[in-house]
Image (cartoon, rainbow, N blue to C red; front, side, top):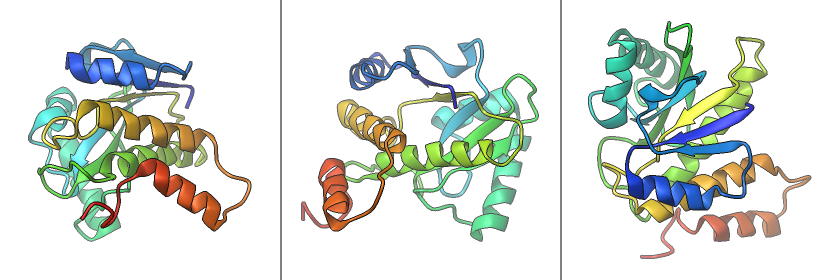
Length: 201
């Protein structure tokens, strides 16, 4: 992947993403609808686990690419995940659109619900980046430009600054894999992510 475009029409989400990703030269932050982007190879679907693409960004994706895309997504979920794609996974699905050939179906929640005080945004962002990398290593048509909305910021109710923080942390950690794994490394990662257990119970 050569470029990541973070695209969201919400001015508050845009501002949070712009601030969080300011250090990253290969990331462009755009306040607009993804349909208006001039070029991208893969659009991230901030999805639910069942491929029901009838609301929010998912609905915009289906309106743009056609309802057949939902059927292909659900077929992949049935075959690859026995009907429920877990949060923390992402699958690359062809759109049949030559200008924008793929989506990355990336659940941030099992069904539409609030995901505040979770690490779902981090897990989804990290999974999407891994899926794109693995796709590009497979020998298929490469994904050079990924377009991604703010994750978890609408139905999920994640505060915009927190969503941007988790997205940037996932991106930064993806770019900087360790040379080895120790408990010190694992604890540092968890301290950075913060969420993901009973820490706040």
